[in-house]
Image (cartoon, rainbow, N blue to C red; front, side, top):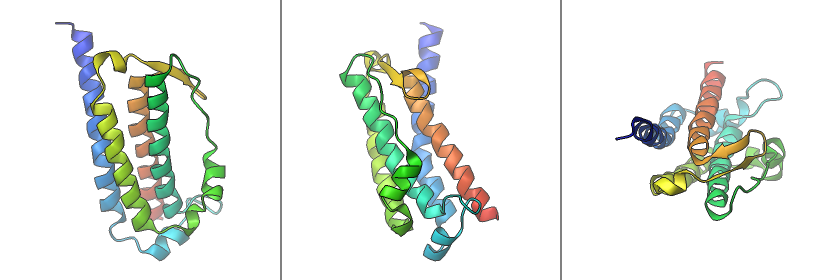
Length: 162
């Protein structure tokens, strides 16, 4: 038995497990946050509100999944870049309802978990070229999701801690 293969498989499974927890952690954190607080509390004077962060998590979950699907369907694709600041304005995140954005995120996240959990060993070896990180494997992709989640969960808790 190859130790590296087993360990890499375990790493991937743990990251998929972490993805499962994000929706629950987000729900726990936001349980006592009012709609008014979600729109008014910000990460600094020019920073995002909590509802904008929730919308960003939702939309980037779809982006992560679409990039991974490109990696499955094409050989070494150049993955598209996205301007998250422009997206927040274009999609009017500040006008959305927190509960709806969170429910949409949890539904999207279930699709992302299902996608990654179904990958075969050969599919895990697929790669692409990330717009900011260069060569990018499917393992990098699954890890990026959890690290992105953690960054924004920390951001929300920091906003709430005031």
